[in-house]
Amino acid sequence: MASRRGERRADLVGLVARLALGGVLVVAGALKVAEPAQSAMAVRAYQLLPYDLAGVIGHALPVVEILLGLLLLAGLFTRVAAVLGGLLMVAFEIGILSAWARGLSIDCGCFGGGGTIAASQTHYLSEVLRDAGLLLCAAWLTVRPRTAYGLDHRLFGQEHS
Amino acid sequence: MTSRPDASAKLKAAAPKPGPNRILIGGIIAAVAILGIVLAVILGSSSTGSGGTSGSSALPQGATGTGGGIVANASTAKAGAPTLDLYEDFQCPVCGKLEQVFGQQISSMAKAGDIKLVVHMMSFLDAKLGDDSSVRAAAAAACAADQGKFLDYHGVVYANQPAQEGAGYTDADLMGFASKAGISGSALTTWTKCFDARTHLGYAKDVETAAEKAGVFSTPTLKLNGKDLPLQQLSQQYLSDQVKAATK
Image (cartoon, rainbow over all chains, first blue to last red; front, side, top):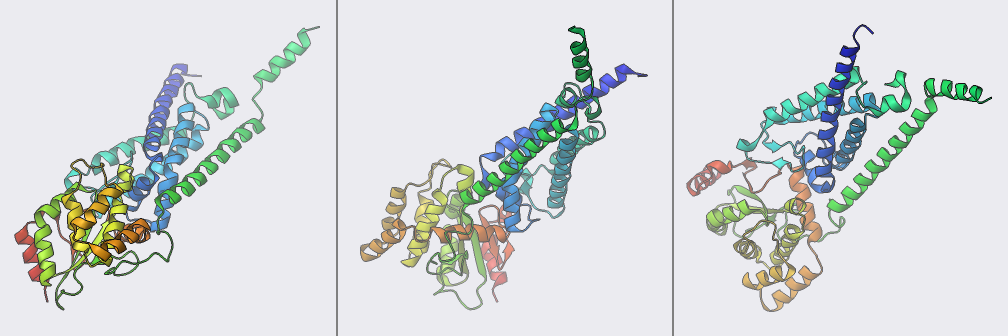
């Protein structure tokens, strides 16, 4: 109660984090969901997982991204969605950093596309930074899932906000 | 009279909502998620058709095995000649460029037996471009291999590559290429049968799978005795120097 304004401000920070992470996830998923073969190949191009497993992940990932993104945009089950979204970002960071470290030249395939590209066209640094920023959003929402205009609070009341 | 029920309703509204509501909604969302994921995986794997039509897909002449490339010059390759693996996609513009600049050199090295030329016809651009031209062209070229005209057909396809990536090849295009490649008479009849029956479509899909398993995700990729040749450095001089250095 000491600072209702501080609380409100934190709720708004949470809102921004929620919309940023959720928005990016929905867009990323939507751009890939119609092209499953392309998405599967983008995952295979990391050469981290066995061929068939990489295919399954490539097919499932867009759906997972869209669902998590929608939950975050709605502010529904915010903490669960943020934890899962954060884990996705950690996985993406591992993939991108390892591709970078191994000297592969691939497109991250984050928003469709993917596969090998010319070494001069790689954007590893900006990809890593972007996902780090999104990871921060996920971390904030995990610690403090209460956000402005979230459905959690409206539907489930105070203790779940 | 009405004040009592009003108060209890208010109390009820003010109290925290009970758990089941949340669990129910969560359960529904989880169920939708699982259904969506399973559906995506099933639809996805059927659309890629990875693994070809089945294990029984017919191998074209010169293929090194299931999903293997086609040896373009098995009869002429000398004993100590290095292996040049060429990974290409018939819809890839840079592959067309490569054929323009290096095609002559590579095929004459192959004919002279200085290299063992193995061509892997990939088709991942189909997924990118939303058609099936690469895999059909690869199957057509595999049918040409059965007639001993692989390199000729391969060359004709690249010579007739559409100016705009994604325009693709119609079946009529691919049939026209056969006679341009010098397949005629009874050989053309056999080729046409092979092409119409999609005999080597499964093989072509297997090649894509095998290439990805070997870590090739872009075309053109050239490997000399298994080692990547950097495209940026590629020149006719460089290529012939590398081949000489790799010759035993």
